[in-house]
Structures are given as C-alpha cells and as structure tokens.
Length: 305
Image (cartoon, rainbow, N blue to C red):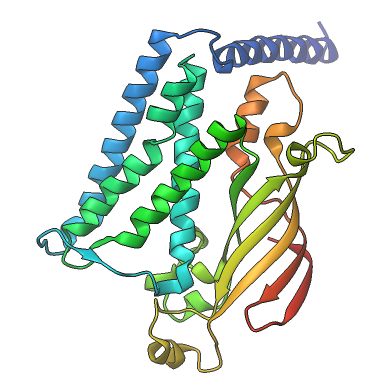
C-alpha cells in the first residue's frame, strides 16, 4: 500500500466516522415529538444543578468578601444611563428562551415551556437580587427586578401572541478608552470589559421583517434592528468623579438603526446547525448603522459592532 492509498483510506474512514457521529448528534438534538420523561428530567436536573452551582460560586467569589446586612432595596435606576437595566432585559429573555427551548427538546407541552422554561431567567436573576439584598455593599434593586420581568414578559408575550419570536434582544460590543481610567470597575481584560464596560455595550431589539410582512419579497432572515447605548461613563452616576478621569467627556445616550440577520430563520434540516444558530442569535451581526445621539447629532458607521 503506497502513501497516497493510505491517506485516501484514512480520509475515507475519518469522513465516514464524521458522518456517523454527526448523524448521532443530529438525532440527539432533534426535539422529541411527544413528552420524553428522561429528557425532561435531565433538563430539570441540569438547570437546578447549574443554577445552584452558579449561585454558590457567586457567593464564594463575590458576596462572601463583603459584610452582610438585613434585606433591603435600593434605587439605582439613575446609574449608568440604564445600560445595566438593558442588560437585565437581555439576560432574562435569553436565559428564559434557553429554558423554553430545552423543554421543547424534551417534548414538553407549550404550557410547560412557558410556565417552567421561559420563567427560568426571571427566577434565577431574582435569586441573585435576593443575594444583593442581604449584602451591605449593595441591595436588591427595584429596577433590576422590573427589567428581569420585562425580559421574561417579552418572550412569553410574543409566544402567546404570535407563537413566534418576531422581536429578539441582541448584544454587541466594541472596546473603548474608559477602562484605562478605572480597570477595576470597567474591566482589565477584553473578557472583563465585555461584561463591565457599559460604554462599549449596545443592546438591540431586532425585528424580523418577513414575520410582520409575510407577503413581501423580503428574505425571511432579514431583520431591522434598533439599538441603545451610552458613552462617557467611568462611574455610575457621579459626574464630578467622572470628570476627574475624563474632563472632556460628556455622558450621552446613543440610539442606533441597522440591518441584522435572524439566524434561526435560515432554513436547514440539520439540528446541530439549528442549535448553533440559536446560540449565536443572541449577537447582533455587524452591519451599516446610523447612530443618533441624544443631543441631536448623527453619525454614520459603514460597519458597526
């Protein structure tokens, strides 16, 4: 057997194994037609264990180092130009969406998907608020609870009204200069900055055109997106402290209008691809974008992310 033949056979075997493995993965990811109790129990256990592990980790890595207090609420609605609240809407929606899709995979009824799956995000983030409420450093936030409820309501409301998710919250991020002033607050690494630097975050509501205009010739995957961002923030709300770091900076709200893609509406029978599309449908696709500042100025971006 020469080298070429050996390579051919190895490649063929690898291809057959890949196809076989792919078919097994695809069959596993395909939602059950009827209730599969084994799958449903698996979903419940995974969600319970994952949520508990995250809450325990948060307590050990974060809350444990700060003094405790009696449970109390705070009003932080004026901070960060409400960018943190937009993040809560986004997070509650997508954690709830994931919960509903997992129950759909198990073959659970629509009622259970909405009641136990879509509310998972709200329940989880409410538990985080309770932990905040017992911390002397922070406190439970009325605004956060309302934002969490809004994210959950956005998913369930559309499911009840249209049996479809026509409007999807999405996220995009670009690096800014502000973390250089307060890296401990706004993030030292890129990963931390994505989570902490509100100046670089943009939250979107991405609406599918064809679902609202079904008789149009618009591609089924094409979306129009409206985004919200803010800049000029190195602190939550204290302009004087902010001016110490960036005297020239002005806190300003930003609104964006752009095109987007709903990856879940790209036709494919491959359930592995459908899963990947669902995961990445949380992220806004870079596209030409019109930016409108709260002070009335306009800015055009050939590509904005």
